[in-house]
Length: 237
Image (cartoon, rainbow, N blue to C red; front, side, top):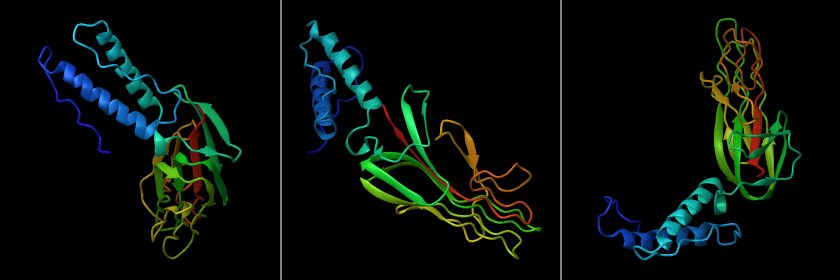
């Protein structure tokens, strides 16, 4: 079933306002049937009002309620996954929702009990440094990824060795097939910041004179790079 036609943009007072309501109702019905068919909390769909009837305002209110619900509750394959591991920590976000995160500093297993979306940060080990070179931080990937139910192997890459003739590359980190692969001579010279644990942390810093170690930092001088990390986050409510 293709997505229904959406109404065109219209100027206030122009004809076609009521047919627009029919198109909106068709589109919302499509959203409900494709993403929220089994959701008992999905708001009631608007009736198609007749111009001038008191139900016209109610229809607008219901359209707003449905759109707000869709905004705040991801549908179908994009619902949040549930994880059976014991969480490393939980916190309440600025959006009022409670999140749990699972932090891996060593190899392990992430067990997803209900398939869905997880927020992931995957950081490889940082490059090892030499006396003559500044090593780059680890490679990284982050974002929202759908994971199937089941056990997913987690690999946390070690930092690259220091004191080599050339920069010692760090080792990759991964969750299942998702991998942050270290570069040939360490990796990117660009760090990134994430608040996935509820606290803002900078990862993958090139080793200048910054305090160490953070996960994925490059080695300073002849030091080894820092090990990577894998962090998964899901929403509890």
